[in-house]
Amino acid sequence: MSTSRQIPEITTLCYIQKDNCYLMMHRVKKEKDINKDKWIGVGGHFEYGESPDECLLREVKEETGLTLLDYKARGIITFLYGENVVEYMHLYTADRFEGELTKCDEGELVWVPVNEVENLPIWEGDKIFLKRLRESDEFFSLKLVYSLDNTLTGVYLH
Image (cartoon, rainbow, N blue to C red; front, top):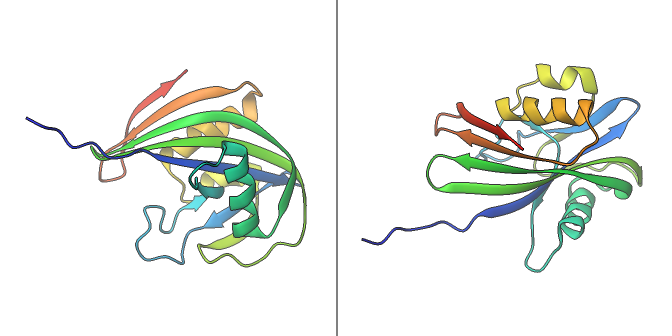
C-alpha cells in the first residue's frame, strides 16, 4: 500500500511593531484563501533557495513597501491542517524599518494596538504565539493542529 505525502509549505510571518502597534493584514482580497477574513502579520512562502531571512525581507517589501532594518527570529511554528497540509512557519518580530507603506494585493494593512490584536478575527493558535511574543524573548517551537473546520485540536509548545 502506498501513501501519498504532500510537500510541506515553508513560510515566514512577521509582526512589525511601531508605537505599541503591530502592522496587521486583514485578508479580504483573495477568494480562495485559507486566511480569508482573518487578521495576520505579514510574510509568505519561500522561493526556491531562499533562507528564512531572505524570504522575510522579500515578502515584507512586496506586501508592505517597507524595508526591515532590524528584526529578530522568534520561533518556528508547525501547523497541521487536516491530513494533507503541513506548514513550517518562521516567526519574526521587527521594530525598525524604512520606506512608505504601500497598498497590498492580499489584504488591507492596518496598524493595530498590540493589546487589541487578540480581539480581531485571528486563528486560535495565533493567540498562543502572540502571548509568547509578549511574555518572552526566548526562541520557541510550537506545533498547532487544526481540523478541517478550523478548530484547534492540539497545541504542543517546546
